[in-house]
Length: 312
Length: 239
Image 1 (cartoon, each protein chain N blue to C red):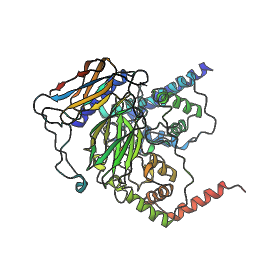
Image 2 (cartoon, each protein chain N blue to C red; image 1 turned 45 degrees about the vertical axis):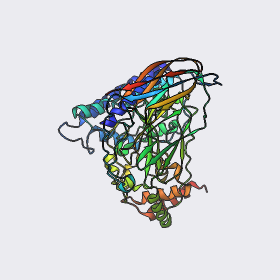
Image 3 (cartoon, one colour; image 1 turned 90 degrees about the horizontal axis):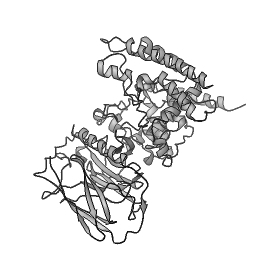
Image 4 (tube, rainbow over the protein chains, first blue to last red; image 1 turned 135 degrees about the horizontal axis):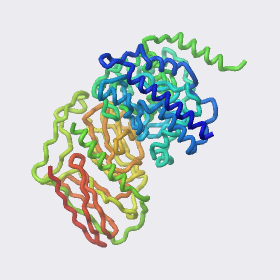
């Protein structure tokens, strides 16, 4: 059993190395890497089309074997960007930053030794749940992060990677008594014109325009100075583009984003200042700022989804 | 650049502190304890505080304000943390105490404050503008909390769990900078405007005392406290 896992790990490492090297060499140095060609695009396309984001099966028990298996999987799939030391200084990042070679990542890859995670279901300051990490690996942070989706991986592999990256820091052990409960999100109410109008007031009250601008274009007065934890510039989200929502562009994803904040970035948690009703108003107002916003279509889709869920 | 420097210092300081972390602190009744007191000063004239470039919310934040890195009078240096490095048992403290930390006229008040691990920071916004209180800890100074404060006068309480200097910033106003120095015991304080400080109820013994300033770094001094006595600790930073 162990031998088999090891063998597969080696195979995975092989694939990963090829992937890493290809990522690094695909784009020509004199050209700004284009997102419309090459290995990177193919990988993104394939990885976003295959597999499930949420786990279907049970998560395997965490033990030394699973962590070791996760380490091999990490070396295969994650090492290129996140690095041998798992501190975010992977070859893809360093080559582009230092030598102008290969694919330039818009953000520095996550440093797993610090365990500060942007997309979580837990309040600001708390560690993400295992399910959060599983979902992040599966869905990727495609929006502006270039973290591809890895939902094509077998669930066991993804759980193993979760176990491995958690083993890289003492935080889970040291802070296990300090963790606050995840935020539970109910099903979103149907969007209405009234809800959206109320959301506009919440947007004003919460002063979202400070960074995101009055029309949600990401051009507020504080926008130009924003930096992330790596002291690198970071821009507030432009709400007009649905594809740019890192934690998911659906109502629940938007709800979670302003409720828990994106730790490691300037996006703070507004949890202490918003009632449940206000949160949904804000969610629908933010979503209504999209270029392709069509309230009738969204309502029809939601009605259909609800009907599909109701048995009989 | 200046901010980056201070972060580097804070990083070094917290790394050292983490390395010296040992067992939990035990609260006891201290009888006939001693006092460590003295003055932290600066040799020569205090360096000039740089002017802050106020780019927004000028009606609230004002203009022409300078940073508060170097404050003090008569050679004394304010906002210096003085803390016993390692003490396993000693005086009691209020674990449930809330340490007030205000956003006022786009500055943090107080600029430097000490706390015991487990106590809560009571974050408030006294300004009619959006602030966010973004706490950074650890040797790489990564996000500990990031709390939005869109409305005035609502105290948000957040527990302090990490030891060492916690750097506090506001992403909405990039010049704002503050510090919370977290120890696992209550034997820590911040110097007053004349540089003076006093730490009481110290059980007799030999201690290493840390002296930390956001820009000038940190030093460690040996102090012997006699039962019921006062141990003098004076230190002078220079550039």
